[in-house]
Image 1: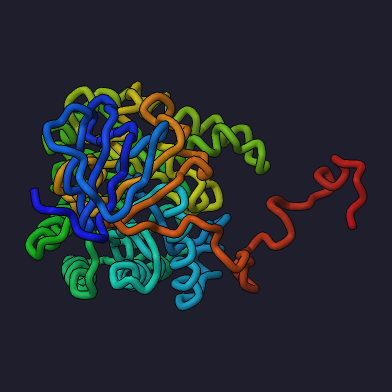
Image 2: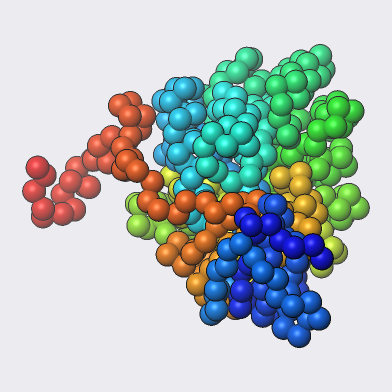
Length: 452
């Protein structure tokens, strides 16, 4: 082995969780020229190399940084679809997204997928991070989500044609082909399709499938012909079935599966991103923000019911990936990127080591960097974190940002100091300026405190 460079880094005496599903082991890692040059175990024949810099990680865990395969970096934590579609300005949203990307770093996130973006912020933010203009995790991005005129989860707030917020309405074969090609032209990494949505009088469980199989196949055929994968928002059995059969490369949510949908997913071996963090946060902590007890029960039931089929998918070898839907008021940036691991352990019967793999090496596919990042392994990109604690025994350790001691992306140390200046909301940015619920008489009379 040649001598390491003067800028090399040796992380010594660490508990190493490699992100590949193997049991932890004690050792050291040499990083040079942005990559892991060697993983050194006690008793290895090679002597410990002389490195330019050293970190003694005794008592701490060295592991791959977290990858979040379902994040909305441009949304800035809206409380409602109205706020998201009508109270976000393109330039200001881009500036705020750049700041929010730094919040992910401080939570140990070294990569994320922003599958759909307000305006076309995702492409520009990714390019700014890659150019070193701002600090941020590695990022892959979609453009505007493709929707039919039925809309997605925002109902009548979406127009019957054209673009609004993160969505582009496509109505004909020619429009589908043209929009996919346009997005590839501007530089997206993924094409996202809102395969399901909500209608006022729908009869199905979950959401309504609003694309035909033929339309879905047209999207994948068009995108794949020009080297771009496709990801789908699917909350309903038929949508999951048809997305898998149409050749989707990743499926978000995948809730309410039936046997036919499961069979299609297993046959295609398409990765699933359940994204239970949003539901789990509302089910467990909704009472803290005045959420309806009924809604909390609905979300808890969605997790429990869907977990049955997802566990069958895992048993059949289907990749299960961690995504959090960070970017909404229930899932603010930097707070919940560990949460999906916790849900995987509690609800999908994964071990902590298996959950870590789902959030690291397995999740590299969301970055389109499968095999190149997400693991402590010779030759991989040095996208790693040092944690004060042992996530291989308790993944919730990753939720305490004070325990994230170092974050490296390509071997470069990321800043973990508080982001300055302190954040405030621009005028008109939030809808609920006066509180988080309607101040009706019963609410006003429920407290003896005076209203100032």
